[in-house]
Image (cartoon, rainbow, N blue to C red; front, side, top):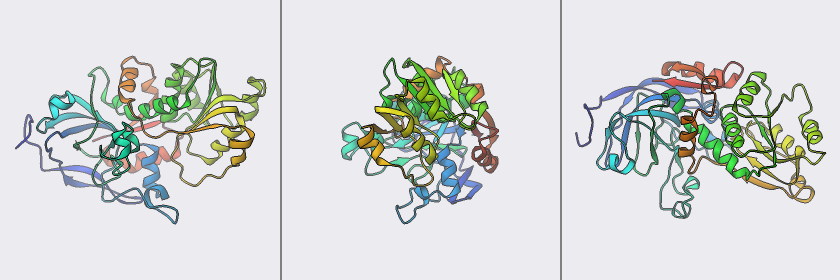
Length: 366
């Protein structure tokens, strides 16, 4: 044993292994072993993300079509929202990351190459050469297993013991939400609309609340989620099944429209909705991973409104902020983490996430 551990790691473990779209198997797999500057954790909790669901269902982004090559590389262990207990430290890992055996730890979802143009400029979340996100690539197996490894080049953090493990698994989506809000460049008197009150949207609401906009408006088809949105800081909530949300936003802004619109639904209709309700010279933030291509009237973006269109990808430099928000109890976590299932019930968890009627965030416990 050439690493630090209280006891030798077992040889095998139970894991979910993705072999293809809708071909996810609960099976035995080798336990990862740490090399220099690597960390092995015993997974405590792992969330099911909307992107996990889209990969599971066979979305072209992950499996490819005539427009693109698929991102997923089976066989691979999925899971990029996680927290684990440190059980083994490769040479130099403890010193590099400030970790000790027994600590709770997380790792940013991307493991950059640190060599491409973007990494050298500090824009590591847009890494050109590897762009290895846990749970989709064979270089970075994810957390739907009893153990996982944080490889060389990963960005790792200690999680305070005051944060329950099943709450700490929410750090990743919360950090993504924080970055989306940062991309919105919200000003103090802005009217901000967030479309989608799922796990990611709720994190955006809590982060946007800290920007103190004039009005923070949230749109969702679920009244239950809108209730949680209020607990996260929303001033006004609209269910588009009941009201014309574009008309409502125009009425409350003297027919100008909202200043910032953040799309976090994953549905093409929400893009067109945002283009209609945003004011001229407004800022539109596109966050979602879309299952299908989106077609809109680009004249609205250019000639009609001269909009600022900002994409939002991953969560650069936001993990410490997310950890701090959870330490301060700024979100109603017991309302957000609605279900905790054993790892063997992945398929039930995927069905819950797909339905969205009974759950907000579904987490698995190995």
